[in-house]
Image (cartoon, rainbow, N blue to C red; front, top):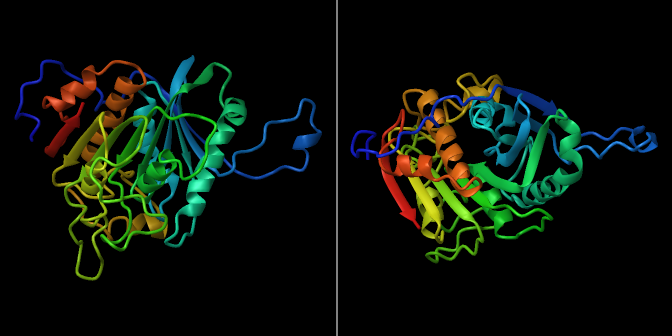
Length: 318
């Protein structure tokens, strides 16, 4: 489905930078020996380091918790996070690990701990005029982070806060069907996910293709976006972006050895900006629909307003 294949009745600007000025804030996770001796005592630091993107202007804003992909840094998503924040959202991106094996159980526990920390610890890190609305909470993750997000939503760990919406950005549950990484999320039973929330899946058209014969695909068939959507119940939205790859939503310049590797391991599209703008816009439209009650932007995308990309799949369960 191309951006010109349908005439939309409503236009959308979610693919452009929003009206809010944004700031990025890094928060380390380390205990201080003096914190308990202060009066009043300071809130505990977050269980994991955080990257926070937020509006600079005064207001109360819905919250998105966004999880990075396998062996990636949360800072690699800075431009995407700021795009989302510019539309009036606070985005929390924990660095769940630096090195990890195939088992994601510890990431799920760390995500639950970070979520449970939010009510007491988050406001202390924000300017007094920027307030998080924890009753409007969305969870999203990319690649293995998408798997982790679904695992938490499926209650593989307990949280004190309730998420209202869930997003998988090219989620991956292992190397192949039958080679899922523990704990497995996919059951291969259609519409089996028991999720009391709206879901959006965004897939990459090139993710299931090999970059070269030396490496497997970054989002293999059998454990990728298609399989996640098959197990979703309504309400659910599904977009697959044609001609873009698994890592094409990252920053234009990802530094260091890991940053350079993001250009080498996965089959990529012609540029990252277009994929990043679409994903940022789709996330904004989805959250406006299911956290704010305004579905006009999401419906505009459904009707063909796809901004800078062409979609090969659009499917809704309503």
